[in-house]
Structure formats: structure tokens, C-alpha cells
Image (cartoon, rainbow, N blue to C red):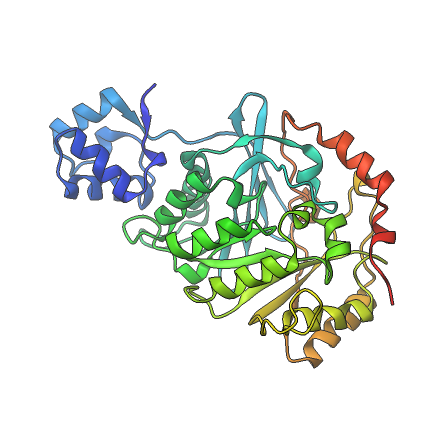
Length: 384
């Protein structure tokens, strides 16, 4: 099979071109054609030497993903379903806002973490996506939107990318980092490090590696102020408990493009949304809680997320007045707090709703059903 050039960041493409006997500037030209212009036909890359075009035609291709469906929400949100083979499909979501266009990108077919409130986790896990499959989501969305919006050459449709789609990005680290570098490269998409966000449920060793290899904005799926409750909601917490996770967040800020961590907190009715839990959350991020006592404050922003219910979860969305009361406790403590506005829920494109199609290799449904029966979530969190 021909090499997929979407698999390479610029350094990787330059090394590959060198193997063809081509100089680096040819790789830069090729990279620009692919990512800045969205071109996949080598014959239309007019400033490439004809000899190079001939070489490429025999050994390489720009292979995007097969589009299965496109859905548009009443609020302008767009959701694409892409075929990634083997009976698997992943979802990608574009969210238009007044000051930016955000693309939510998937990193895995399914997810092995199995968070209680996430529809993707209930689908199970099939495989990691390749770098080219991650980049192809941005490649398709950017150039499709430029065309549909009638943007001029050089105008950008997407200026904010969040790795918050299907999967745990840091469990697909080898493919993730070249994809991030392509997003950041001025010869590619030219995105600011502050405008590329990796969201993780807390894979501590990979947080440290990302800090050193490709520091971008970091969002951490927190969802609980104590280990007992977080064990039930986010199973990865049993391997990397809150004390270790918050220590990794402090280390990350040494090289982060932002001077804060975003903590994501899904508001679940009667589970993690009581005022006492808000006060405990304040103590946790201030370095005064049980899991962080004496460790120092974590500069952070709290993003409270309305839960998007699905039948298998057994959970409900927190009432609006309770979310506001929870937010007030955090704000009164001096913590920047936002309440995420639900977008795209009419096309199942909102946070926690992405499911795609997954040929599960992990028996997720049975495991989650057993855990729900043995460890009822509502009983796992102490409501004081």
C-alpha cells in the first residue's frame, strides 16, 4: 500500500523525502499543498518538480477518511461520521462560535477508560487511530468548511482544536504527538499552542511526556473532589489517584503555553453536585484537601459541563439551580468558573455523546453493567 502522507509531521515528511533523494524545501512545498491548500492530487501541485510528482505517484498518496454521514445542528454545529475500517467509525464535531471555530477530534475507535457518564466508553474499545486518521479529521473539516463558507485563500475556518472526541488521547501517544505538531506547524495549520487542547482522564506518565515533547493546552477530566467518588466515575483514578494527578498538573505548568489547567467537571444529579462537594473541590485545587494537602495551589479554570443523558448510564443531569449554586462556591473562592453551553445535542454531538460505531474488543457493556450494580455511583460519593 502507498504511504499516506497525512501520517507525517513536517520533520517526518522531510526525512521520507530525503529517502527519495529530495531536499527539505521540497518537503515544505508538499506539506503546504496538503495542509494549507487541501490538495491530494500530486499533478495539481504545480510548483513541485515534475520528477518529484512522478516519484510520488508511484509510492505515496494523501488518503483521507471515507465520510459516512454529515449532520448539521440547528445551532450551526456540524458532526461528521468517518469510516476507519473493520466495522469502526469515529465522530468529529465542528462548533462555530462568535470568536472562533472549534473542532473536536477523535483519537481512538472507542475508549478503554470507561467513564460512567460518557457514551463513548459504553461502546467499548477497538483500536488506536493512526496519525493520518487523526489529522484527516482536521484536513477534511478545514477544507470542507472553507468551501462551504466561501472563505478566501488564507482565511481559516478552524482556529481551535480540542482532542476531546472519541478516545483517551494520551493512550495513543505515539500517533498523537506527530498529529499535534502538524496542527501547530506554520507550514501546516499554524494553530497556536494555546488553541490546541489535549483532554485527558489522567494518564499521569503521559502528561509528563507531553510537557516535554509537545506542550499544548491541557484539560483534565476531574468530575469528583475525592478519590472514592472518582474511582467510581473515572476508573483510571484507581491507577493514578488525585494526589498523583494534581502533582502532574503542577509539573505540566512549568512548560505549558497557558498558565492554568482546565478541569472538566460533568454535573451529575445527586452524585457530585452538592455544595459540600464544591467546597471540597476548592480545598483540593487549593492544596488543602486530603489528596493535595501541603502541595500548593493548582492554577486552574473549572469548566462545569451539563450531563447529556443516555440510557445505559443510569445518571441524570443536575438541575440548573444546583449547577449555579455549585459554580458560586467556586467563584466565591476566586476560581475562574464557566458553565459550558450545550451545543449540538439535537444531533448527538454534545459533550459525552459521541459514540460512532465500535467493534468492541473489551466487553465494555458487561463490565460497566457489573460495576454499576456492584458500586452504585450515588452511594460512592459522600454528600455532606
